[in-house]
Image 1 (cartoon, rainbow, N blue to C red):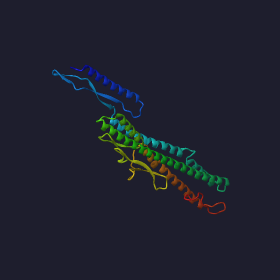
Image 2 (tube, rainbow, N blue to C red):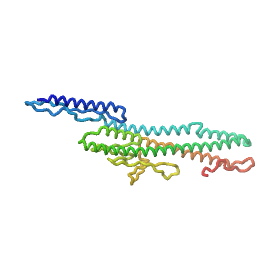
Image 3 (cartoon, rainbow, N blue to C red):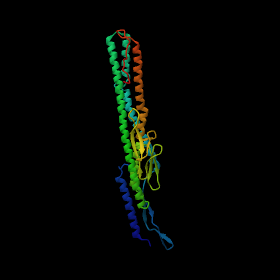
Length: 331
């Protein structure tokens, strides 16, 4: 005969577990990265009785996360892409304000210099016009120097942020490796039961990592994950993590390069990373800061050399050949 008390007790226990799971979901509704959990129920093995089978109640078979791995992977890619463009936009606005604002841009000073030059050309003997030209020339030099200094400071700010991002990537890699170890231990010691909350915490750490750099995530059979950046450089392999660091290169301009290391081997990944804020910062340097530096130098050199060459062909008020109007740009 059916054990009515046992069946009723199994139902109470199943309901209690389901209620606990629901309560756990409710209190974690604002927990970052938390995935809703559900209780899986199944009938107990029936008892044979008189040629038939009598049910024995219900068992809790599992408590699983409601999570779609495809959606999780797509979210990581989208997060990496968004943060890359966001970093680029942030610095592009700074550079645009610097070069486009009349109070900081070179164009207004250049125009004032050419206007003063035209006035001197119209009346070469005018002392006031000559003084205005000299003042305008000095103002142009000052503006070139000021813009260069501000772009240089923007580059230094970017270098500081590269240091911070590299450090954060290393910290998250260490956290993910630690989660791998904990998840494997729980999974092994509990005969295959899934440590849902630990899995959520690791996924959240990977999501935060994808804000900083594009990643490839490989799931292992033992529930650990391997994380790769760049063109396949490992950041996390099982319980082991690698460090991302910045080093200063040998160029004249202050530049930080990115390397990944296990403490012995070092690989430069500056030109390999894609996605995340890190990629955006490197793109800013390549497409905005470096070209601005180069263009400033070429423009200043062109203006100085062209004007000096022409100035040396003219005569001053004492009928002497003119000298250098602008000082040597290399001095």
